[in-house]
Each structure stands twice: as C-alpha cells, then as structure tokens.
Picture (spheres, one colour):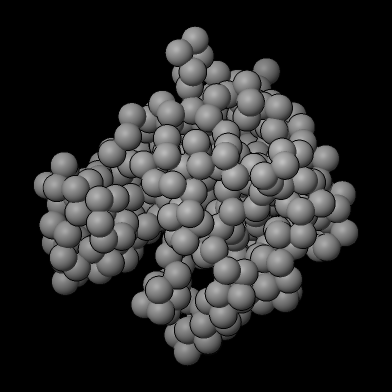
Length: 344
C-alpha cells in the first residue's frame, strides 16, 4: 500500500514549509507504507516529481519511490534518462516510473504547449521515449535510435541505473489502446477508473494483449491510483472532497468522481470500496489523501495504517511491495531484492 506525498502547493497552508512533504514521506515509511509517490504537471505550482523522489531517497531506507504519473513529454528524452538513472542509483534501485501521455482538455494540450512538444502522436512519442530510455540504460556504447517520432544518432553512453535494464515502467490510462500498449510494452498498470468493474475488464484486456505479444509470462503489476478520505462526517466527506477537488483540479467533486477513483467515508466504507478493486485484481493501492494541508494529511496516515489488517484480510499479500503481484498468479514481480542504500 502506497501514498502520495503532498507535493502540490494546494496542499501547503500559508504557514507550512514545503520541505514538510519530505518529512511526511519519512513518517509514512515508519508507519508501514510500502511506497511513496509524486505527481507531475506544469499547470499548478508543485515540487518537481523526480526532485521530490531524490530528496526522499536520501532519508528513507525501504519504501519504493514512484511517479504517478510522470509526463515524459515535459522533458527532453536523453536528459530525462539521466535524471531517472540518477534517482534510481541514489535510491539503491527503489524507483518505479508510472508514466502517461496526458489526456485532451486543459490538462493536456496546454501542458505540451508550455514545453514546445507536439500534441499529435503523443502515445507513440511516449512509447518510443521509454524504449529509448531502456536502450540508454543498457547500451555499452553510443546509442542511435530511429522511431516514427524520435530520431537520435550516436548518443554518448548513458548513466547506468542501479538495476540492469532500468526501473520498472508502469503505464497509466485505461482506454482500449492504452490497455493494449500496457500488455505489450510495460511492467505495470497504474490507472484510476471510477468503476471497479472497469478495472477488472481493463486487467483482462492487458492479460490478453500480453499473451498476444508473447509476454504471457511477464510480471505486470496491477496497481490503482485512488483518492481516499477517512471521515465520520454525516455527509460521508462530500464537502471535504469538493474542497479538495476544486483546489487540485478546479472541478467540483461530482466531476472528479467521473474521472478518478474515490474511496471515502468511515473506515468500514473505505475498506469496502477499496476491496471492490482488490476483488477485480488490484494488488498495489496507491492512495492520494484527499485533504489539503500537510498536518491533516499526516493525521489521515494513522487512520489509513489502521485499515491494513482489514485490507490484508481481503488479500494477504496486499501489504507487500508494489512489485510483488503481477498478471501471472506466480509472478515474482518487479521490485528488486535490494532494500536500497541505508542511512547511517
């Protein structure tokens, strides 16, 4: 079970030091979470995702560090490969990359325009970027790459990652095309479908695509990005969720719920809602605490940790690291045995 660190400005009060986001991550590890995650965008002020994970790498020992989801189009591919390799090295091989291409509307085209990246063929660009990264992380000499979108000649040998082949790369998105690509090319799936049944259908499509691509034996980690709020409020947390949705996305909660998974209410209600996704195949839950200030998020951590026994009763290995459960029932997953570089 993982949690997002509060890296966006909307989650800092006027009197909050942004560095408390790192302290939040340390607390989450100490209370038993298995992974820490950072978001990525240019539309709202925030700490840059890979910078956050580099800071967390220095002060944590055990947890996996992930992006949910990194937008590679915001960075030049070769420079991004070096940054990613650096974070993987500094974390002792604890990095997981959730990646995405964005989606139409104000969260998509405007962001691409800010960095001068063409919006058309964005999915092909994403797949080729990941393929190029993997070559740079494994190549012995200069690397050349000629895809349909990206073209490079004689790139100097890149910074090697801690793990041979680089960190696992998980794909976000749940369109039919995204599901097919996840099965063919990626190491995991990190969507946020509002309907648990859609999660199960998507996972089945990924299995089919993986088999058709000759990857039927590949361990593909089924994860879930879900907004969570434990509350005893009479409205089940609707008012709090609305405040959160408007601050983060400029949308009312009704619109956010059409796009993203949400589990809110009493502890029993949250377990029931998360359990529906577990029943559909989710094996690593990545929780985004749906409150705005860091002290309130820290208070939610303790409540979420208290849910662990109930969630483990639904699935005994749910509390293991994010690479422990793949598409195959016997999959060994993608997380390395190495626990990372320990602090002295």
